[in-house]
Amino acid sequence: MEMKHLQYFIEVARAGSFTRAADQLYMTQPAISRIIKSLEDELEASLFIRSRKKLSLTDAGKILYEHAQVMEKQFQALQTELESLSVLKKGHIRIGLPSIIDSVFFSKLIASFHNEYPDITFQLIEDGSKRIEEKVMNDHLDFGVVFLPTRYNIFDCYSLGEEDLKLIVPANHELVNRQEVTIAELKDEDFIMFNKDFALHDRIYSACRKSGFEPRIISETSQMDFIEEMVASDLGITLLPESTIKGLTRDVKEVKVSHPTIKWHLAMIWKKDQVLTPVKLEFIRFAKVNLNVT
Image (cartoon, rainbow, N blue to C red; front, side):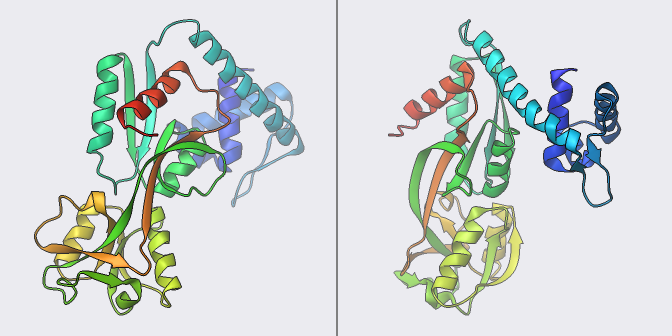
């Protein structure tokens, strides 16, 4: 029984689907199915109840799943201890970044780290904050940059800073010359927002409801450029963090938001219960020093 095959079994059990597990593991569905069948043949027991809706574990599958998770953690601990016998060596770090942020500061961090440790490579994946949390939780990413608070109490993190959201309106909008506006004054506006994979969507929606109305959302997207273009075309308004609006065009204007102000708190997260490799520990240390995080 190979450890890799047990890891594939764990992923299928978590995903509840051969197809979804195959996508997460970058394998084909038939290959995953063959590996699970070989495990079942070796154990002489069925591991999954197969149905059209979702795979579920048999009693034997539940027992194997419980023990396989323990074995996976022990295997990771073994690898970490073996790695720690030597100085930092070749490694690979997977980081999730929300497309909403100005990634320049993180690109500089990675460039500086790579200059010091040229044999360590990086994979950067853009997604919404919620999806990034899930991928870190399921070990598909090592680190994630997300919007706090997180939805799960399983992460360690350090802050990358907190700032206010600003109202972004077309250059010819009636609010453009105001010093500040309240959320309640946006009741009759059309909103253009990041989609529900982004925690910012929930924060704005919640602020509007607390101000007595539900925002009228006419468009949702995962692309910052599209939001800017929609606002510039006078199709609606949006709310964005201060740091993301520095490069906006002259066709849109920013206005301060008050009563309430909406805070945007960014942080880098990683799983609490994982055994961190020397490479990952050094990246955390390096990030804190170079980003001046206290």
